[in-house]
Length: 616
Image (cartoon, rainbow, N blue to C red; front, top):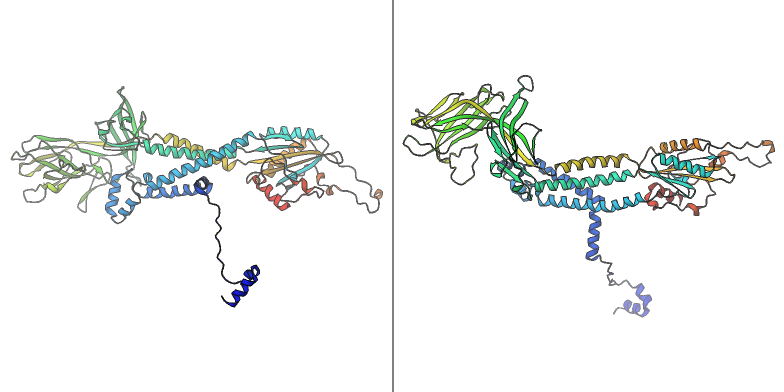
């Protein structure tokens, strides 16, 4: 042990305080929250307004990729096209579930947390608001002079008469008012909080409607050619999607037939080709009932039971007849072709799957690649194109193939495309690939006695329909309307309090004081208080001022009192706007009397709390 350490040890406690040797500090453990404490802390954070706004912002951000990136629930074909064009991004998007945003885990988590947060915010505030409705406006503060809007005058009326007149006036202005001690307390604008609660409840309603619609919705598409019909069964749909809780037993029993489609287009001007008439005439029956006629237009769906039938698109279905080498008709019908531009230039496939035999009697399948224009405008870069969507000059171009269409392979196949992997294209006598443009009524003869195909003069139209059930739409609309109404009330209704105090002064004259306090930003509070004061003043006018003493009769050194010295002697009708936080005008007021008589905490009124802080 060194000499310094020995001396320090000998000095005892005093030496220990002088020592520079490092000390071993004993860690003092603080209180731990525990499981219940952490749950309460998490609940308080989740139900705070800050977290609710953050979740609402995250929900808005999460909806952005759902609008920009093709969604599987909306169009699987577009999703597949996007995947084929973006091979690098596709694996990343799939891991982030960006092709199914609205059913993804992360979007559902934000959605559920926001739902719980809103409920946690609304329930306690609703009970608090009910308590406010059952309560009464708080009594007048000790000093009304410190409130933002203030006025006073002296009147010959009795204090009881002034208070009764003030009470009747305020109730006539739809204030909740009552008399407490020497003042009348009134409050107005409770609908502001009601609007705030309505807005938040409406958000919950819209969230519920959105979830309900996603879980129980159904949506299917069907392409129908003029003269054909549809029955609302699962096997009749071209494509069908539904929510996770939807049952196909819930499909509404109805059927309809497309009688005709009518489409007219603007012929001249900058809007040439724009549809003017776009409607489908149908005959429908519900649940085996009598047939009814209806016309379906864009944004004017047919409502049958709980389903709506929307008109989505339309195109042309040329009628063709295919014969084999012996002249036997092996195919006759309208073939729908898909348009790919605004002038309904269309493409598709004609497939003869059964009944055809070649010149040797061997069973074979035929396929024709079809390219159709309703108004022929010539060839551009080797392909035809249409210059108008109406059937003014229809032309079809066909390319023939024979072999195996691969329709029996068990793999799904696009009805508008040919699988040419097992097909051979027909060739003419010169060895060139067989392809021909045809007008209505013309026939293309297949080489080597393989038969023929005729483009009939009858060209039909088809319409594509979407049959959907959205059970939450009405609820969502009601929630949106309620949200707008609640937000309007929350923004434009101002909650404010008014007090009228009437007491007898030392000289026997009644002193009337009026003051107002806005529970929120209210620029019109001074004007409203002034209007109330003018009406009350008409019932309790200013008392006449006493005659001034003759200066000659005033003793030397005795200064005459003037009305300006007495704040209560404000001239009749003079309304003074007092800034918030202004100190008391009467120095005789006892600070001990400055305790507020409000039934609520001073922090409930920011202007009062600020004024009280400045006073102290």
